[in-house]
Structure formats: C-alpha cells, structure tokens
Amino acid sequence: MEITATMDRIEGVLAVLLLRGDEKVKFNFPVVFLAGINEGDVVNIDITKDATATDEAKERVMSLIEQLKKKGLEI
Image (cartoon, rainbow, N blue to C red):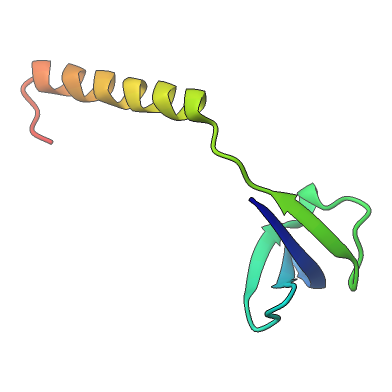
C-alpha cells in the first residue's frame, strides 16, 4: 500500500502529514525519516507487511510465555 501525503508542518521531532485527497486526515511521522523533505513537499510512503519478521516475533513471544508458565507465573 502506498500513501501519498503533504508535509504540513514540523512539531518538534514529528512531522504532521496530510493525506492527499482528504486533507482532513492527518498523521504524525518522525522527522528523522524525512531528511530533505520540507513543508509543502508531497511524499509517498510505502507500507508493506514483513511476514517473516511477524512470524519470528510471534515465535519469540510464545517462547517467552512458555518460559513464564514453566516458572509458575500466570499470564
């Protein structure tokens, strides 16, 4: 999924972005990831799911839960 937005302003460490096509929708994004982007610039943000990392995170959490259960702790 690709999101197109306009950088409206910077507030501290966050940029306020306005969704193109519906400028009523605004969201904050860390300025550190927007080097060279200025107020009024249009940006494209690509969002994809990392299935491998998701599976690894789930496995790690399940392992931690099992360790806690073995120690007699309720979750």
